[in-house]
Length: 176
Image (cartoon, rainbow, N blue to C red):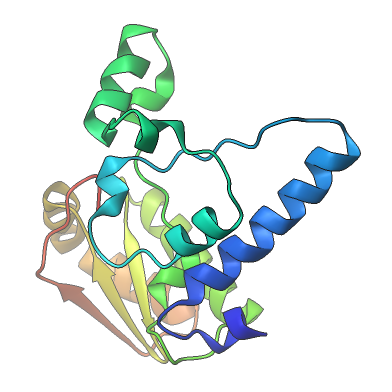
């Protein structure tokens, strides 16, 4: 209920529930530890889920070892893991402004919009939900592609129920 209301600390409620369920699972199946991939890079910005991590006493080895996302990617590259170049996959709820309630239909529309944009060649689009307005938050390369595909983008997102489509000129990198 707290999560769906979408307060500023929504992530706390999500992580609190996630860690509770993981602890139940671990206890049932005799696991001794639960590890979380939070790293030093994740300490930047507003991260209410960290409070839930600490309260649940979940182990975060990257934090303990002072390892950042760049080093994690380098280690993955060294071992030939394809996750070394995997784009960040932020929670879909992060596309909905705090205070605007979260529901399944909104999440579905955002997800479908991002999947559609990927079919047009955008690599890691974010569709920020503002009711009947979709605000596209893109990396530099995707911003260029979006201008070339603007008519298809407008048509496709309007078919998903967005009356207006805008491009946010604040560029984000692959970590954002």
